[in-house]
Image: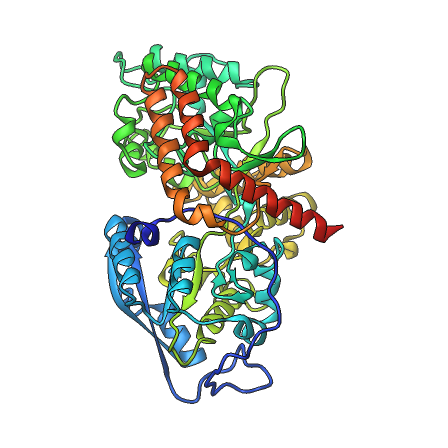
Length: 547
């Protein structure tokens, strides 16, 4: 039970919710606009909180602010009369373990952020309340437009026995798109052309490993960064595997129109063989299988890595390489395929966090009020983006316990910036785009280093220019299963995920490729066959409903 509750695994959606009994809500809000009104007397709400190095470092740069007393806690109390509290605060793995134990024991805060497995367990145990009427009554029109932007799927996934048991903190699928990031100063030093195929990528990786791209006379560089969690959004293997038509953690359609799990398809076999060759030839950090992202990132900071796959925010992590080497220059490239083919970009279902409310908490509408204000403050008509979202490149949005955002906000900002540059009309820039443009100009015109990452993401040749191209070229491959967790997934998905990661890692580290076939057999026998049947039953129902 504890392992199930502490698991943190992305999932998707099921179908709609129906007429339900009214939740008995003790509200002091005005009836005309309940989603924005302030309580007449303060209302307290408790959460639990995870912290990491990035959040703690940011707090050290914000005098007079802490997790318990900051611009967001003050805003929520001033505007809504809501006082935030934390039952406990913990770091990383300790947070996951502590949350799992707390949920299993039924000791939950007033509002708790959970994954789909935890949500199912809490609902089955009768520890949380139905939020169907809360959402319909208290979500503002602006909030609904954002949370429902990718359809009903996130809500369907939070619906159990016809009741909406949590509010999804939705995210955009396109945010998970991968890009290839290369040190272009190394390309120039070795007189290498920019890649156009996967064959080119492999040649560059080999050259970065063997030809002393940093010119220090030592063999201390690696062609590609990789972490021990192969699905990491930065320094993962998903982008490379897509170059061989392998999509290891989404469901795709086979030639008969049935859904099959990408992680057991034969294309994965070839991608794993390529990664194994790279490892055995020394193109990967020999200790990558023991390293999380923060550990592997030190190699980037120290100038030992030449390429990696990562999402659009990658520049803000790899910028550390410029601290030791101001000449270090990185550029985003599209994911590439083998010669003569066009790569498809895997987009996983990206909503996997939900806010559940304790059964006896008398103010379940608080969760919607917090989300309404967070969205309105950052992206509404009178947004204060540079105060409450990103303050001088500090991610102050993290100070809030709820952090919803418009799913296409980054691509929208990129397009606004490009339109302003083309037309010479800055009035097309909304609050977020305007703030980003100022940082880009600070870098391009005044050489302010803090603007480098913004330019590499939102600039004319940045990552989001490639995302724009992905969309235009029809390269986006969405997860074809958008249903909630199935019955067999509840019991077996964690086991299957561990089995998959272990098999992939063992093969990369040198085990015979035939172990992939053994993994596929075991995956099917240990629940994969039944999950596949359940996923296709969902597809048949969905297709019938659409017809």
